[in-house]
Length: 216
Image 1 (cartoon, rainbow, N blue to C red):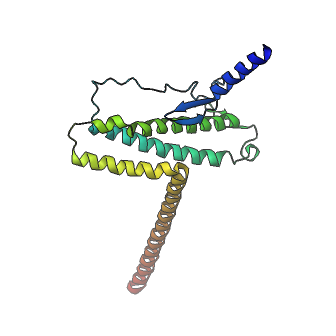
Image 2 (cartoon, rainbow, N blue to C red; image 1 turned 120 degrees about the vertical axis):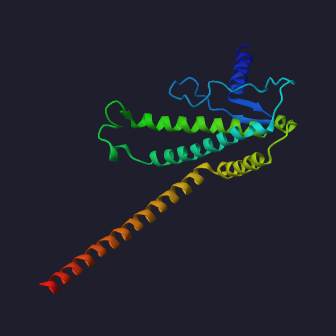
């Protein structure tokens, strides 16, 4: 009897570790018992939607969702980049007390690492959900007439989405590298401008001295 009970309990625990959605088996890391892990859902969502047949899906309404997805994927990439950089920093090299911040905004470094992990997980789940929604078959059944310009805009946004989604962190790092390059170019332009201004001042001083000598 004890062996049977053990087998039943074992199967029950194994079933909790996996959830099946749309023919795909996914491993769900259970962190629902830890209040610090707010980025992880307490339980997997429902396997089916309750969609009324009377509801009309208008494809012209996809643009706000597409823009939301693009922005959230960009945020995910930068959050992953920040997490990757931050976890490589040794606490002892930047803090004598294992904390960062000033009055009112002091946090322990391990807690900050957890917060970044939560942000990444929450954004990852959010973008997966919105991406699945945008590709759901019920949007293809819409019969409403679309504005060609808006359809083109949605297509362009979704092209950005696919580019970012392929590797959000790599996309973000390329963006950050571009920002650093732009800052370098701007600094170089400022140096050239300053040099030109200084040269102009020297020329005017020499000319002024020459004119004063000529009139003396």
